[in-house]
Image 1 (tube, one colour):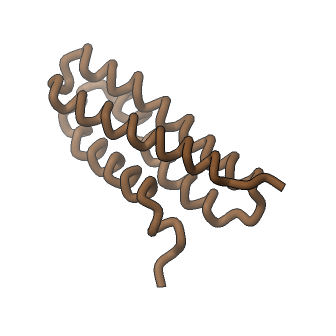
Image 2: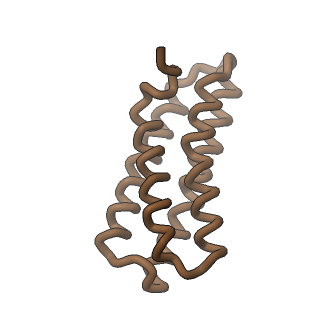
Length: 116
């Protein structure tokens, strides 16, 4: 039986985002950007999973909020990569659009949580 978070579409997309980041990392020359982008991207599905396991609404919402914050941290990092010439415009647009989609889904997830 799968864990409940594995059925969440936002979790699946967040995992796809991480895979894309790791695929990109081979072309990144800047170690600081590479490391920060890896950590921030990994934080997204990790916090979704942890939030899904919490019993109280406020705790759930806090973890989803942290996941959203990590996602928002990835956006300027991807922008830096594009501006520094590490990724081309097409790849940047794919990352940006996926981040936008995940962000909207996380906002919806946070709004769906009832806080006691």
